[in-house]
Each structure stands twice: as structure tokens, then as C-alpha cells.
Length: 86
Ligand SMILES: [Zn+2]
Figure 1 (cartoon, helix red, strand yellow):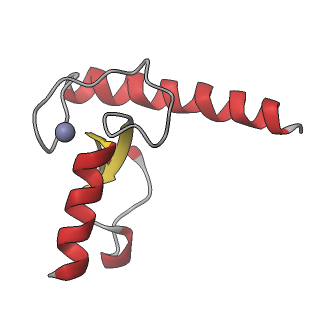
Figure 2 (tube, helix red, strand yellow; figure 1 turned 180 degrees about the vertical axis):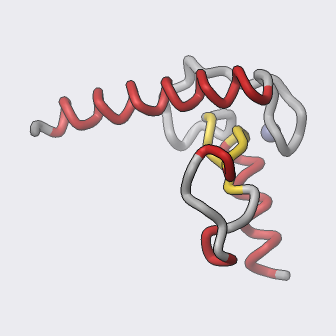
């Protein structure tokens, strides 16, 4: 599989997952409540949509959508830092 094909597959799966989570939870960030923009594709964009684990994997949380919420990249990182330092 070429790098491009893999990227395309990843983006398609990602968008499907976002569609399912938005249908369940709405279109706002689970951490700050701000609007999510699913058209952003740059992974370093602070507003890029990420999948936040409700129960962290390190604490035995499941790696599936029942244990995921949508969050901005920056919000998810800020939360992760807080956990790491606390
Ligand atoms: Zn946010």
C-alpha cells in the first residue's frame, strides 16, 4: 500500500468515526464546548479534531468508540499534560 493510499484510507476511516461520534455527542469539543471543524486536515492545527479517551488506555480504558469523545487537538494535549504532571 502506498503512503498516499494509506493516508487516504486513514482519512476516510477518521471521517467515518467523526460522523458516528458527532451523531452520538454533537458537533462540539467534549473538553471546551467549542465548535469542531471536521474539514481541518493538518494534524498540528490546534483545532484539528482528535479522539479523546474518556478512561485513559493506561488506566485500562477500552480503545473503542464507547470510550472516546471528540476534542480539539489543543484541548486534548492540555488535558494530557495535566494528567502527566498530576
Ligand atoms: Zn476544545
